Length: 332
Image (cartoon, rainbow, N blue to C red; front, top):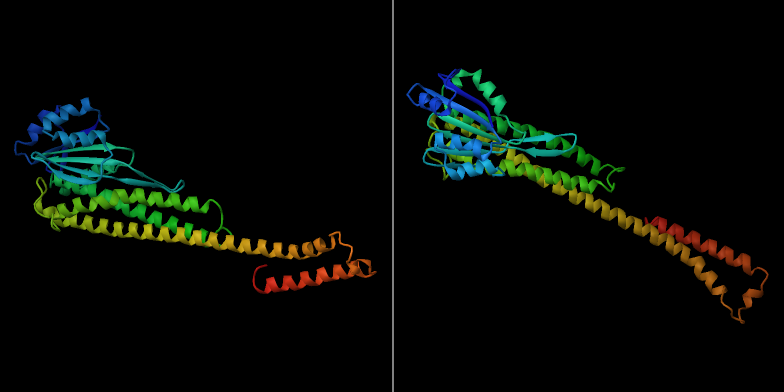
């Protein structure tokens, strides 16, 4: 479904033909204009007309319709195809949600396809319409603004994840809550969210490096102005910091999980020592009572008047000595 369709001439939104083919033809007459069409989860039939009018490559169209793509950049004869994955973070439920934004960039046109609820497109369009100087650079400005908005939100999500990890770390090392049963499941669930975030940020590094003209894959990218390279390089730098932060979060949450499991192991060993100590203390009177409970005829002490109190005192003395010994060694 088409969410918005507009013609931008000299950096400003203008009225134009409602028909997509007429709008594109008007923009290609050398009027320094381009058309920007935004779609939300289009069906194959809805996208067919856009595909024909703009000459989009069928493989890119297939990716745009099916979604569930990794961030990437692909160059075709008549267009440039870029996939980005904007993310959101629900702090209350500790869940990272990801959407997808596909951008087709060509001669005098931009087609954006959105999947999922996480998307900065409406905000980006509104901001660009208030900055005509940037919009004068054409479709390249749209691609840069979308990438910049997506990566800036990555920074915010990384900060929120870092804050939540600090709280989880404090809970793990708290003397009262460190051994709670659901702590390990919470740590594991948090690690899964970090992994989901990483799937969105890591693959985007290579496309931004190409757009910035850096690295072995750097060079001229069709339909992107060379003057935009410093801007894409700035976005790439921000993404690099995000990826470093994500790697740090992943390592730290693994360390927290290992520390928690070690805590649980130490606590279980401590509990086993206490159980063994109390069992040893119970074994002493049980052994003495067992000996004198046997039906032997030749046990002279059974006929003594002080036999019963003597055995009780012996049991008590042995229990006290054993208790002090185990207490001194930290078993009780």
